[in-house]
Amino acid sequence: MPPVSTVPATPIASEATLVTVAPTGAESDKSDVPALPVTLDELVDTARACEAAGASMIHVHIRDDRAEPTLDPARLKDTVAALRDATDLVVQLSTGGSVHDPFEDRLAVLDAEPDACSLTCGTVNFGREVFLNPWPFMVELYQRTQEREIVPEFELFDLGHVTAMKRLLDKYGPPYGGHVHCDLVMGVPGGMPGTAAALVAAVADLPAEATWSATGIGRTSVTVAMAALAAGGHLRVGMEDTLTYGPGEPVRDNAQLVERAAALARLAGRPPISTDDARGMLRVRGRLRGGVA
Ligand code: KMH
Ligand code: ZN
Image (cartoon, rainbow, N blue to C red; front, side, top):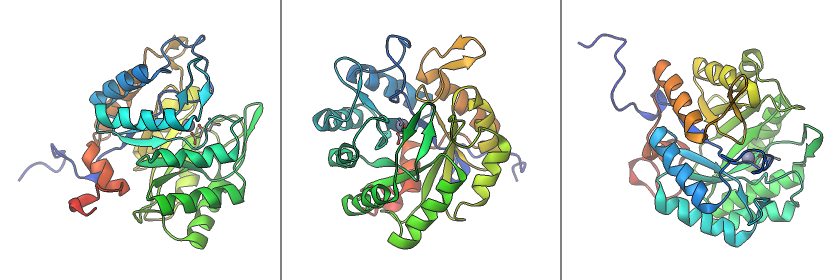
């Protein structure tokens, strides 16, 4: 009999860690952060490198020809196609966009038919800005994900967002695929702090059957990752959330952050999940576990 500490070579989903990479975001300027992937070629190269490093989902924001955030429908469609062509990553489009994007444009993101999309469960102060997610917008977006068979990832910036997510589920039923997956976004100035105590409080209030990841903004990245692993959660990392690898050390590229997340996950005894198992866990359309479409 193997020793009890033996970690299986191919862990099943529940024993493995989903590593999501958020490579670009809408907040940083290419001129300030040259390593930020902003063109389609840069995004695809980044996606390939991050998949090789252990990521199985990508959270995507795109930029226009001037490297400004955009929700241009044709660009979004091309991006989904290019990422599917080049990788097996679960493609999750941001419906948050930038704080300046109108609700209609954010809803129209689903027309690009991604595997998954973000769905933020409430308004939050976002540094000096406000990230608006009023209840009617949340409901409209949620119902569209159900109709379009797109898996929502509930983005929770604060404890009240957990309550709002549960209210959404109670009133409008389960998400497409039937499985609830959320992401705790911690350390945004205006949201919950990136601390182990805040993470434990948020996780205690999640539905028992939900899976969840966590990401810590800025210097809270490693604290949040370690707390998430200790509490049985999954990880999101990337240059959308973190631009320094350590004090005074700029991030080299997104793969560097994924490599560190994968290493922490291995140390925790829950190595990175395969892209196939990620699709099974999240119940992505056409790729449900056991081949059920
Ligand atoms: N860029 C932020 C305003 C999301 O992608 O859904 C919102 C955000 C969340 O990044
Ligand atoms: Zn985002």
